[in-house]
Image (cartoon, rainbow, N blue to C red; front, side, top):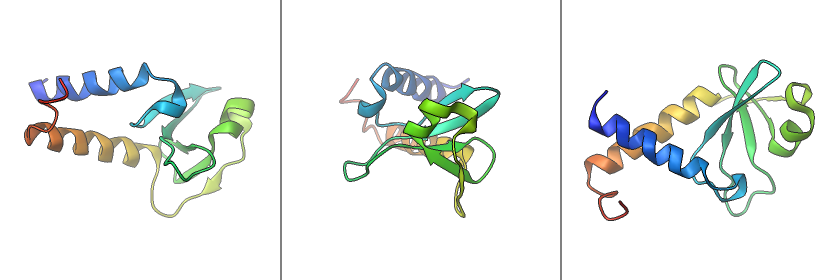
Length: 105
């Protein structure tokens, strides 16, 4: 594992220490055998979204918290949870390579 990968993992771990409403990076959650990736909420959104890890579907985070795997999932044409995690990790790795996190460390 290279240093960039370790730093990316540390940044994600640090973000997960925040309450869900204050997180800025996606995170996985598992309930009843289903894994979702929760996408952080933009300031204008009503609720966070939880995307199934390997299917292009999502539900509202409140529904996921209350109903777990029985939450109502909707089809999504563009992304699944794995896509969201991959994009976020690539973004952080790119920012690290540019030295943008050196000031934050």
